[in-house]
Length: 231
Length: 314
Image (cartoon, rainbow over all chains, first blue to last red; front, side, top):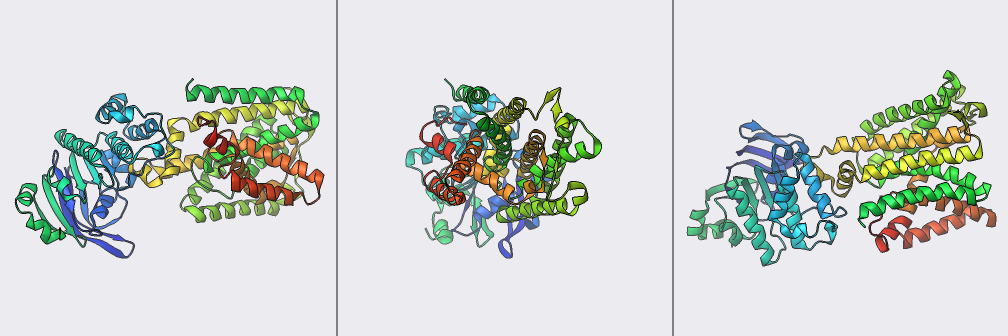
């Protein structure tokens, strides 16, 4: 599905990724683990075309999407939920969803599907996004990305700052997307939350992928986490 | 009642009130109102870019002047009828805004402000440089007999008022419809979070360019109607002052509100008009009032109204 091959990325003159390679498959959850500043968010931004790739290649189903303009990436059904939600605060819930639907010309069936996943949003349609609680905002950010009917979903710390009940709801949505055949790349600080749903785990350090392994292996050998993350 | 129904009723009632006050107010005020409505079209054009798209331009005088000179010079040199000259003014504004937009939108933030200001100043200097045709600083008058449209003499007070009202209403309703359309909501999304809009698949550069063009054409329509209704075309309207005015009107009235631009122009017009009766230092009074308003109503008059009372105000 989505292949990242030996990409090198820099913020201006500061190089942050040194030959990262990943492979996200349909119906699998690929988790990126690493300390702060390791380059996890940079990988997400590079996939979305927000940062220029100086070397290497990113391809979707064998077709390169490296260095495409950012707005072209979601049209290939790659949804991104960035850290910090980033809603359109002065638009209503309904308008935020509508903005998500318009890109790929999705109709009311997709809208109904999204509201079925997040029924609470259906009760808040006329409410301004900025008046939602933190958990509801995360749901809306996720709902808006799902409006693309994504084949690949990138989630950057989706449970950050959420209460346990909300975390569980987001977790269930991620599992549902996986079951529907979506390839998921997940960045998360909460290792316990990751390990229960991940298929593959990639350790990122200093802009390089150090090691890729099955989540089962990691679950059986928790000392690996201590080795890479110091936790 | 739904918010959209309330909004439609508000817009139509507002136009109805403007149509009726002509019969109530003295001639002096109806004359002022005609001018205010035309300047409010200019402010609405500015608000479309600033209030809804989040782009702060300091060069809108150029679009206003382009519409004005586009109409005036085609009437002067090609003997076009007022209707054809008005369309010529709009086409000129469209071309100029498309070119300026394509160049200026390569920059963002302060650089965008400076670039638009520079283009506007260049436009002003071009008008002065080609004084042989434009009559430079002095400007020129459009003959009374040429200011007729479909048999109506637009120099007549009543015709002028209602011509201004019709143009104002068209722009008012079209912009209200536009900002509530998916296109308008996308512009607001870009204003709120440009990067996020890109990440959702929106070609932000294209949307911004279209916004500059719409804003430029509406401002050009204001310039062309000003020339047609008040019979004067002059370089004063291309000065930097006329780039600052719409910004002030929109800030005072309420950026990102459909009714705010009119309120801003009305308020500023009468603030200067009334304070100039009291003292020759009327700009001092105007300045103090503006500072107070900025302190206590930072979202502008309509913006504060929306925040405090009518949350549905478009």
